[in-house]
Figure (tube, rainbow, N blue to C red):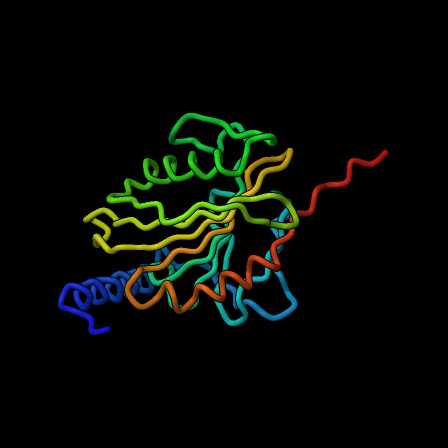
Amino acid sequence: MNEGPDSMRGFRRLRAALLLLLLAPALALAWKLSEAGKPFTHAGSGYSVQFPVGWKYNKLAFSDESGATRDGPFLQAIYVDFRAHKTAFKSLKQASSATMLPQDLAEKLVADMTKERGLENVTTLGSEPAELAGQPAFRLSFEYRAPVERGAVRFREVVVGTVNARGLYLLGYRAPVIRYFERDLAAFDATLTSFAINLPSTGK
């Protein structure tokens, strides 16, 4: 399919945003290169995940979130986000629980992300049962437009989530609809199969 002027302008905005990110010292993170058989483990939140081999990854500061990217965070990102129940939907001032149904979690998550990020023109594309780390989960897909100050680029995002006694675990993938989303979706699906939740031993 031919790309029109609007698509090309959107792509140029993405490339410019990526260049700014790479050049900004304040945003320079200590990215690590993902290697086969060496999953990232977040001890505090009790999860491990094998990010795509060759992608750059890091634990994000001031949060229980980790993320990986191939070409830059504005072009594609696979992320893991752990949320304690009491602050699971902070923007809505609502909690989650270990007994919440997957479809209820998905509905609240869309509302929370929309408010938290200031997203525009949010469209839910699908919400269906899934499995994550061997537990019942939801798989949610939606599109939205980033705010004008962030380029007004249209993104597509997929989030798979589950809960246990500790909190809400989310494994997601987002990328611009133009060029990137479909290209790296398979890498996200492969990452899903590696995700594990390691509950601490309670002893005797």
